[in-house]
Image (spheres, rainbow over the protein chains, first blue to last red):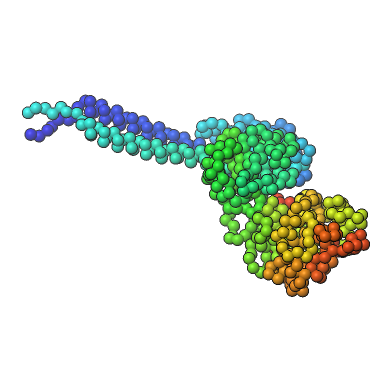
Length: 147
Length: 417
């Protein structure tokens, strides 16, 4: 005889529960991947700009006999001005502007230099923020030079 | 007919559950790999850590901290900085180092050979408290070309980022150099095994020596033509002037050793040094000044003897073994004794012979405590050291961080900077 019975309620509930668990898990993975992608995209953009800024700062510092003085948001490096402009979200080196990527803002910064004899370092720190970042990005580099 | 109300069989349930579980585990593994790769892409060699480490390299090089001498096969790395302090045992003795690296928020910085296969082998076989598991994972993943003679820094920072750079500050991924070349000051120089050119030294690992009748080792220094004798394991270049500067005594005070100091030593490191316009490119270095038998037949023993006594300074003279090592004809000119026998033949395969004869070396004879000079009969010494004037050919070591341009030929010599 033909068996026309459908699923029982218990079977349906069990299968729906299983499907729900898998779907929720998959969505969590997808959301995590999306957030990771967004976070990585912003960090990559920041890193590209940070690389250019660092290269320019390093080029401004001569290997020997550098003269550097810092005050507030500005440093004078061998006659070139390094300035962090928080309101415009950009760094200026010798008249060239290096804007932070879209959505990224400079939340706080610090610029200073210290010498011990002829050994010196220039410290550049910026805390960067963006809605796409999981947590704030800390640009924090110490450049050695000899005075 | 009786209604079939049976549920799933245990076997059916197990099969379905196992299948679902397998799919979830596979997804988790894939996702976990993705997350790890993402973290590594940011935590390994990011811009900040690379520039911070570059500052450490510049600091060590500017202050002439030669850590390469501390490396051994048993312990192929030197701790530069760990847990808030620079390593005084490695000779780093100023407080600035602590301040600089503290500011970077570094946890551990080590210096090791350029050939990272050595440190990789070490960490794969030895337990070591200085290099934790995460640091090991980073080192084991680094793949880079060897930058000869410069050494390499690895760093672990407190924010779980890691970085490595070569000591000439080339970044993590370098261009693939041509085979059998070394990179010196940004210039690729071919290593040869025959004819004129730069040879891997047979006696000192990591050292390269120019040999032959007229190799392309010309370099402009202080507005004059000099020639490169060797590229050393610490990255410094040993160069000598292409012509002598004067005919004068080795010593007029009756001292028997270069570091006493001999009056020529005093002259070269004061009066003469001040005449060099690029003296900032010269680095103080340990010079081999040990005594030798002027007519020996064992070059390896002679080098050992020369290296047994050192003098630290800026301007000196060649060691006798360097004259021998500049010759491509090892069979007939490979020892002091052979050069004495075959002098007329040996001058055809040695670029230093263009300086002629009667010029001083830095060593003195173990038999008489008189300085040795290049002679038409090989090496020789005077019994009357006070009364002898010979030609003086200055030699200096150039900093390992110089930048070179040019091809090293007589018409297009290497230029610094």
